[in-house]
Length: 174
Image (cartoon, rainbow, N blue to C red; front, side, top):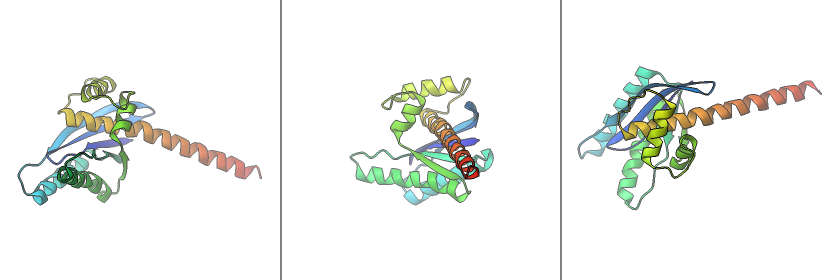
């Protein structure tokens, strides 16, 4: 399964692509989509086209996006939410399933602690993806989101298969 993770931001949206196979992870690519200026619509359009290009190049099977962190600045939170919407929209337009994860869930999955700091997340991403060259902290966070989904999504798929198998055997026993 090829997973793309996003750490949304209006100025910098981190992205990371991994391959996950039977619990083994392999780094594919990572980077940052950027937008500059004051015109919100042009900034969102820039993020949209950059994310489209990344998805076209790396052809992920699923996407995962980190939830927006709400802060005291309502206008800033709204703009971040709009950038996050682009991270949700583009993969959905390409027919991908898109999962969403709270920041604490990502940190707990990757570091083992829900309130880990950025340095701890980056350290574990480097540990889990040996030899990775990170494009920055936003890309490291995006890879963490992808790792979280690979592990959470894999568990969900195994559970669904087990439930289906149990249902099939129960139906045959009647």
